[in-house]
Every structure is written in C-alpha cells, then in structure tokens.
Length: 191
Ligand code: RP5
Image 1 (cartoon, protein in one colour):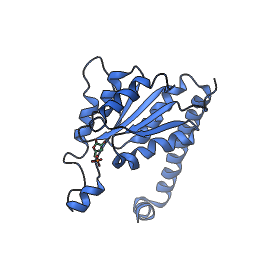
Image 2 (cartoon, rainbow, N blue to C red; image 1 turned 135 degrees about the horizontal axis):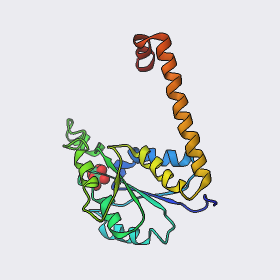
Image 3 (tube, rainbow, N blue to C red; image 1 turned 30 degrees about the horizontal axis):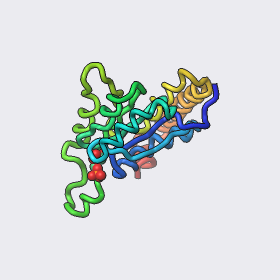
Image 4 (tube, rainbow, N blue to C red; image 1 turned 30 degrees about the vertical axis):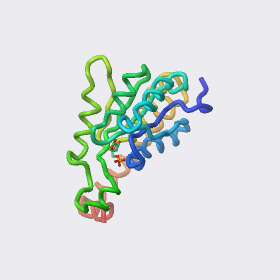
C-alpha cells in the first residue's frame, strides 16, 4: 500500500517551549519519508481547539497522534478521550526560556519531568495513552512507525534496516573501545 501524500501522523505539543524536544519525533519521521502535520494545541489554554482537533483527527486521515506536553500534561490524555486513534504521549521536562530570564535558577519544572510522566501514563482504565520516557520524542516517532509498519510494507522494511544500522553502529563502537581501551575511548568521545 502507498503512503506519502497526506500526513499519517499528527504531532502536537502543548507549547512552543516543547518544540525543540518534539523536533526529534519529526526528524525520524522525515528520515522515513512519512508525512506529519505539526501543531501547537494546549489542553489548558485552548481546550475547545483540542476537542475540535481530536474529533477531526480520524477524518483527517491520521493513523497515530504523537502528543508532547510538560508539567500538568493533560494534552495526550484529553486527545485520547476524544478519539480512537492511538495516542503516544511524550512527557516533557519543562525548559522555559521566559522563566530563565526572570528567575535565574528556575531552569526546569519543579519535578524534573516526573510530573509530566505521571500525568500522561496514569490514565484511568479504558482510556489508554502509550507513554515514552521523559523527552524521548524520538521513541514516539519510532513507535508510530512501528504501528504504521503493520499496514505499510515499505515502512516495515525501513524499520528492519534501521535496526540493522543500530546493531552495526554499536558493534563499531565496541570494536573501537576494545581496541583503544576505556580511558582513550572516553577522552576521544567526550572531550
Ligand atoms: C505545558 O506547559 C506545555 O506543554 C509546556 O511544556 C509547559 C510550559 O509551557 P509555556 O509556559 O512555556 O508555554 O502546558
């Protein structure tokens, strides 16, 4: 089956503050040539827009929605409550430039992403949201591709290649580590 003309994935985030993290999901989808539509939708600041988006997601042709939010992260759960499309939630450790200017020491959310992780993962029975690790938007992208892989053979093939590439890259690094030893390896890689 062909894919590629219309966006199959909706990427949404609660704020522009989340865009640098959510970019990782877009990047992996781009590598696989899978179209995605990206928007900012806030569960708290634009609740009516959230409802409209979720209710139209199915007719828009989305097969998966990736939703990222930080703090009291209600976006993924509320989207899931309005649609049967699988929702993958990305908990975000809030990093807010506006706040940094005001309070020098306040760089991250008070709970370091745990607030968002629990808000997304602890959905009530009957209304699930799949949750990836804090700031792991790339995993949300890969998981979305795996879902699409059930339908599109081409994506499945690319996922196999992606796995092989990962395998080879770990072997390559391990060979180097074995060859030059841990001390030199660390100096070369991190300094
Ligand atoms: C959440 O609040 C957003 O998802 C974001 O992670 C966080 C902070 O948003 P801003 O105050 O920076 O817009 O709703």
